[in-house]
Length: 180
Length: 185
Image (tube, each protein chain N blue to C red):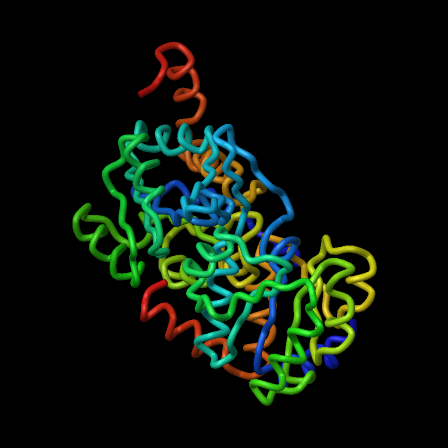
């Protein structure tokens, strides 16, 4: 990882797409005795998502299937529900989104951890893998976070992007004034 | 990044603590939450951290929980369980809250101890007489802290600081003896 190249790539980011399992979560599924499933998310990432959006960079979740848990977490992170994309055809979704939004590959940051993410990670301007992602994902990624999945990956990306764009301090001040 | 801290200096500072305040998320919890399909959220705390807080109150040090995150009240439940009355929730300005508490208790900055982990804690930590960062706090917080715990958030940092403070005050041995004979709560 060349730090200067990473910063150059981060400067161009206008939109962040996040895989859920293994990136927003630690991949662990908790089954309770009532048959209900829970997953573990990070409040650091809540700050990360809110900071990106405050800095004018929108965030979406992209996973093979959006569950009700994902919707509930999106509410906690203040991510609008229409930016929860559920499809395993991740590349197809990216094509569709770029056509709709006018954004290009180099404007997009994608964070993923598995085989299904590799195609999109090779295409976008800035690709990120958590420290505990698959070897393949880490090989393809422009940046590997210090944090593991579910332990603040988004906060780390947000700080990196917003610092590269010179917005971090102002965004944090604004968020703290508004209340988190 | 490794941060070198002067332990002797930290001990001197810890001796003056009369109010020990802490953040909730990332200190009492690992800053994570479990979420189920109905949006019910669960938080994990560390059993022996409760003993840490109780040890300090038993030795005349006030505890305050200062929570910025405005989604759930789990910190409040934990505070109630520990019979701690100073719980403050949805705090936008922690510095102002500490100022209020200082007035109420008639103490000054050097009597304030604080443990934090995030950007929201930096303001308070710069003023506090004794500031502590968790092992997994962000670098900016670790940099300004007088002491860094070996435990990460939600895995016993309060227990660790409590021992550090009471040892600095020379009260630890006596307290442990008392607890093991008489129990606490």
